Length: 570
Image: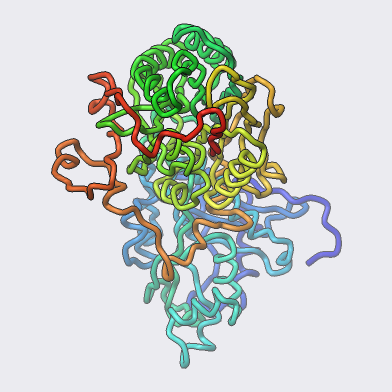
């Protein structure tokens, strides 16, 4: 390597570069044991490549001198991944296998003049290929790599064993190790790929790099965005004379966050609790069942606002009574006019004791125009299994409406939410209620700090906090999250938690009870007498009729002394 370098440039190959290209290629292959007369491309071949696919031919220059190159074609994915030879994949040097309708950028050559190795110029060429693959919306980069060090170990190792030892760095192969370090994975081992490659014993390793941004069916309108804007509402509990007053306050916030172009509006858990004031003469269990009658009117109004304000609304949560069971549910009201229901799975001991609540049975994610999301109500976020199952289904954003009365309750929700963001490589948005509500038994004080949490890696805030509200102050926060950063994290993060799981040792899966089922299937399934049925999470099963209001609370739901009860929220 020369002692002083003034300029390094990477650009597309030009025909006037040919002379220097040939010299650098001769230097690169001088010590390679290949059975060929001249180790360089003929000028007519380079002209043909530049004619059919100029953007795929790259060179790197040092002080205006060509010192390396990467040459490529676009080919059909099936042709690239099935067994083939070098001559076959390049059409016996005619390059008629090049197909602009193909899905794969196929690397047919890459080399660096030995005098300039050590400058990581090969890595620049690889990165440029990846960028080209993304720009052309191709599925992957594929090539067959040589194994020049295999000749020394062929008597004692199979090709598969050799590759594994190179991967574990027990053996160094200058070509294969470089390719593995550039995020390529092995597809197959091929025999007689490049005729005369004695160093590799006529073997080659078919390798692939996947384009995480590949869109199989790109569209020009209604494309899925990568930057998603979240509008989170930190709701202050206040006396409300009627349901219309609740709608008026909610619409104020929806109008505000949609005015800033938000894709989602998130409300807290049980933010409709002020409506219980009219039933304060009843015990807590009966009072919360009374406001369950509002769940369907709330869903309908929020659905109308989702359409009119062009925003997806997550309605926090509210009580719902079905088959005499009390559930804590919420609705995802989408701006396309549809809506879906989610249910709190885990119920705190005091929610059981004072309200007689039961948990739902279905664990699921939701498809939206902004990607796949998960929704968990408060206490559910403290159970890592739920979000991991959602992550396995492709969840990118987890929304957590919560309600906590004390700071230690909030701390549980906050720190568990942060852990879920890290371990599932997703964004987690939490929104809670604040303020005092002296006119409602069991809902007198609240503590919250609404926030959005991120994974912890270089592309994200160092403390894993994207944004957070002022504690105990009514406000909204508007936050942009980048889904492409999650894709990069999954593949290229400092740590890759989802990919590095030892699934050969442990696996997590849903039980049959947690899967979605049709109403007919639900009726046929016999549950134990002590197990409550979960409400259906499709509105067809519940929205056509008002919820049944239980006339009396279960015996376990009646506290001994109403004035001394406190529900430990979260």
